[in-house]
Image 1 (cartoon, rainbow, N blue to C red):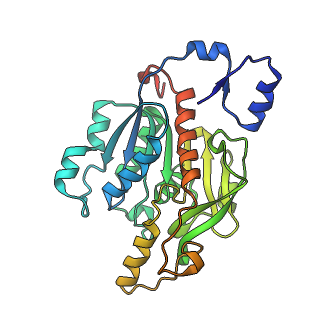
Image 2: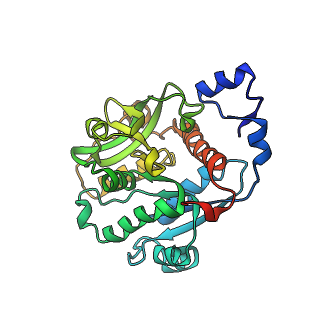
Length: 307
């Protein structure tokens, strides 16, 4: 939450330059409080696991969050019961038809990286989602494939196939310490990575108005801010549970797929040992900062979003 101090106090300028959340007394007096509406477009096969991961992070702030679970209209969920989907999920077509608006919106990854974007069965509807966020969402996060798809749609940034899957935990540099999304972040941090594709920094730099906030020398950009579309593209997985990478690795080993031991994940690189979570605090920081930034900037009257 922001600290309220007089605008003419020297600390106001100092803290603002450092990226600390501050507000003036006039700003505080104008604020009203209502629940923040957050939508989760869940494209992952393990719907319940993904719900838990994101709900844990966005529900950890003092603010009241109204979470809406959303699915693609015609895409069948194969790893989640029909009862669960019927009880808790809304088709995007229904959300759009009802005219609902959201303060925040998360688009998850999907295990379809090998496909060109245009060959994804629900690509046309997903493009409709991207356009819809511009008039019905105040701030959007695209995660992993979801972020790659979104940055490709709006800016033509391509994804590139990797020779081997990037699976493990890599150290990332904090490239924008004053960003409100990185308040409290260390100069570098460990972030889980699990993908067969990558976004290249040169491709991001070729597009004006995009800002890389977190990046790694080994696995490239991790988080790119797109102010013109009120979006963050997060290509890696701060939301992962401690054992999510282990589950993926064990699955691939059981299926006989060529897979290397996840990088920098197991103690001593030994898959027989229990993995340690070294990213949890930064995961909470990122999503807490995102929620806080939404709270500071979204209209009190939700119907004014997109106007």
